Image: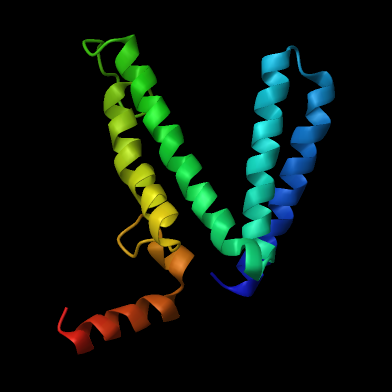
Length: 146
């Protein structure tokens, strides 16, 4: 990801974190306050990954783990609701959509958690890896016979 993209994302995540924290004052109950603080913490992790070269590696791995766990929790929750519910398409909550989300977002998330980099087969890999990095990986695989 380019420096400008990292800075833009980092600044907006800081703003969103501040908004989440300020919104806790008007939260209707304790559960809402906890959710808002968790969202603020997630935004702070993204900002940390954008701004710090030292903390970027651990922050990215934590973000990947959280994305994977969120989709696993979504799948478990949908399965607990029942497997025989009618399917109304991708806009509805259903275990089929949870599996799709786990494949499209959760698997790249666990890959990031384990390897520290976004997979080139993941959705939007060009945005995360950058075209130069993507081309360099392709050339290395061609040279090694892979």
